[in-house]
Amino acid sequence: MKVLDIKGIIFDYGGTLDTRGDHWSEVLWQGYEHFGIGVADDEEVEPGVSIHKQTFRDAYVYGERALAVNPIVTPDFHFEDILREKLILELNFLAGKKLLETGKDDSEKQALFLSLSDSEIRQIAVDMARYINAKTLALLKENKLVLEHLKQNGYPMVLVSNFYGNINQVLKDAGIDGYFEDVIESAVVGVRKPNPAIFALGVCALDLPASQVLVVGDTYGKDIIPAHKLGCHTLWIKGLQWEEKKVDESIPDGIIKKLSEMEEFLKIS
Image (cartoon, rainbow, N blue to C red; front, side):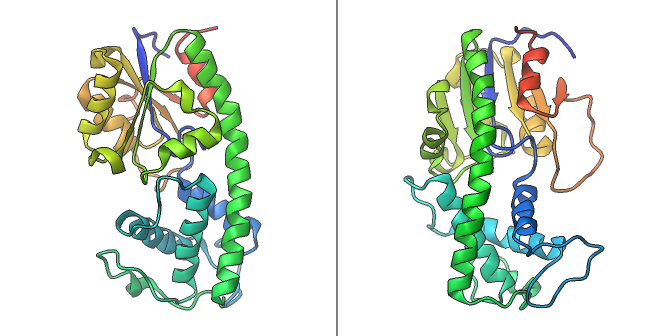
């Protein structure tokens, strides 16, 4: 890995600090598998009881759209609350319930995949959200040690995230809110990745030239490419992606599998 003149760091949040580079659809799918709803593609689904991954992915896309355009998340939402609402939206899609407006015709891919009542949907969502949140908090506790080490080594840090308006509450719950000089959240500033302008706000918050800033993210197209265009150095935490497609891996300055590998990249001890 290259040794670079890095004076400050910008972190993405979702998929970077709260997973090991895994797209959140993969994390949620693991929850569906744990609760016996998701089954492998080479296994037969039980009508009304289980689903294959592609069916879940259609529900996931709907849920993300619905959260983005409907006033569901409030600034005081905890992360477990977001998970619960995501899962309710997805399960409503899978159970053939009425959908919220998203600006798209989501009903085209909707069908009665799962036979669930409204009360069953809510209970599954509550239980699955609790399960996934516990796993997420365990990883955040591990990654907090990395943030602490970076802070001790004098690196100012800023968070830049596409989020729902409650990222400060989520950071507080995880016990990592005190590590960032500033938090740039898409729902607040009105700019979303992959627009490089949102990273420019992070660079300004660090008060450093882009050439001395390292951007750490899990999404090649939304983190690595726009930050690279801005002139920042980039570190790709690469886990399970939404889709596996060939990309130019020479663009990021480094590729890691977990956050603790940053310490070797930055040559800190």
